[in-house]
Image (cartoon, rainbow, N blue to C red):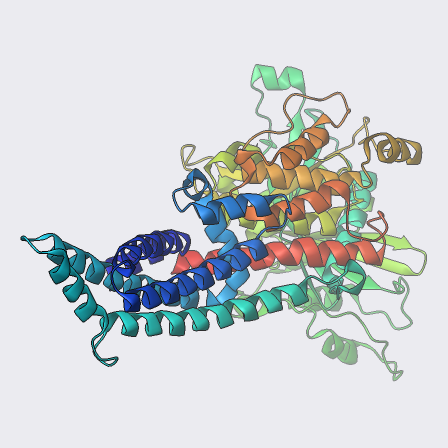
Length: 621
């Protein structure tokens, strides 16, 4: 591999293009000297000028295809006229990134063609230099110099190296020109009017997760009770990594008790110890909930069926029911822990069976203190094998949802120690400055998904910021800084009971934001600010807590000024930020509408996912 090929792999195509432009200029000057003496050299110089012009024109078209601002065209012209222009040094990396984005999978092929052109030009330049040096050595008369030049340029066509090199240049220039024209044609086809953009449908799991998380937050807020006098309130932390399968949603929640301020100052450590409890919550959705079935199962048989995974529910019913009526269809939960549980589960005693019945069939609304009950189950060693704590039921019109609560530390597939260690939480904003480019894109993609999954719920306020997103810390290793673990434990928080409910912007306030500040959708505008903060690794929010949304204005100003701190991810990322800040998706501004959800999913979530995939491939190389 030649030195220029290694440089191409490290620095990109742009430095090689600049070297080719310099080589063309050097060779043209030397040929111009020789053409004064020999007519055939003049012909070769003209052909060489044509090859140089073809290459420069192709480069102009290529660079113009990579720019989005028409004002940059004149600057590109100045750079093409002067290979030593300072902008080649300042913007070389940025131009090469846009070139890579334009060429796509043909970028490496383009680099090989450009490298071949550079090699041919280097050979031509060296040949001309040797000829020039030979004329300068010794005392030669003008007649002898003319004869030597004539001999150099009038050798038979098969042996003339200059003509051969010119033919090679013409061949490779044509190959490069065809490749660039095809790529530019493909790029032009992508730029269609927004009305013709085919947007993807939002996956159903987004809506299912949003509905389940909203109803879970409301049911916990309405049903949670606590008789522990040392608690002033409770805080729930909802993991961003929710799962949805066959209409059933799995949510990971952490419940932490907040001690009263006076007891916290005194260092009170009561029986509850205020240790956060990890819960896994699974939703069961149906059109109606049968509270009084025609042929009910005995409680003991139903408890055993639930402990074994609900898979044998129909078998238990056939053994205990005397009715021959066809049973109604029920929602079945596929529990992946059944296989593990069947291997490790010993025979349970009658005491444990009684507790299993009370937990599986326990409506948490009926308990005197949900907090004390969950804490006692968490600390008990004789709970139901699947760690079930109880359930909460929500019924709205024809749609009914039941949330089954499980103690996550008692589930078979989880590592108990990993849950007991994660007791602290910190805002993810403190780690953004340490992110690698891949971690930045990963975090941005997770935030975009979270907006579609949790918007208009109590978990994600309209005026949210990066301070509302936190990660769990390991108290056993206070100095550990594993950012990958932090990104896998991102969560949103909610307090209950909360006398100071989260302020929800009224319709009039939202209209004022739209008319006075041009903020069409506050939630998406905040997403744009967050994406820009991730890119800049800087705090755009600052200390503005007066509700004026000055950070949105500042973010727009940074975009308009093309500030150097936000240029690392290129124009496509900044276009995503701009669309979020202005809610510019060529549709309405209501996130409840299918049109805007589809636009955000296609042009933000999927675009960031594609960028993340590209980064993963790049870093894996």
